[in-house]
Length: 176
Image 1 (cartoon, rainbow, N blue to C red):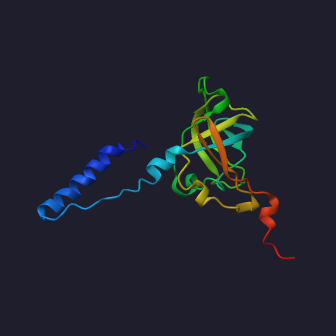
Image 2 (image 1 turned 90 degrees about the vertical axis):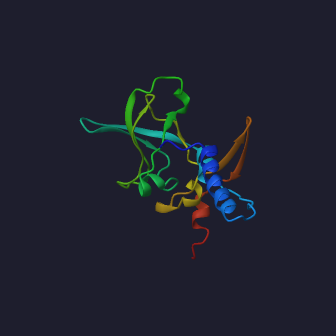
């Protein structure tokens, strides 16, 4: 996607609003804009650990990661597109075409289909960009998987704001 410039969008909207109120000789209103995903989406990065690499000749190469549709359902539901990098190899050339699969054992658990990455190997860290909007709020415990932690970072400082779920959390509401 090629997002529109925020200032252009706001200027266009405000121009329409002001012209409408001016045409009717009405006092211009105070307008508040909630930019939502426009700002928050790009603010998030999800980190995954690469688990395995699977080569299927004449079809495609897959890498699996330690997350999936439980923490990012948007790829499966909306065919959302994401960009990513192997964080610990970010300075290297992205020369491996792979599909990133989650760990949920579902055919729809594909996070990114056909992306060029830097030689992904087990233990590498995949950084998937623009995952700030909706991901935690839409996450689930499907297949009894715990939700990951959420960490805020700013100017070299980090703070855990939501702790990683434990298996004890998953069974906390079970009745004997």
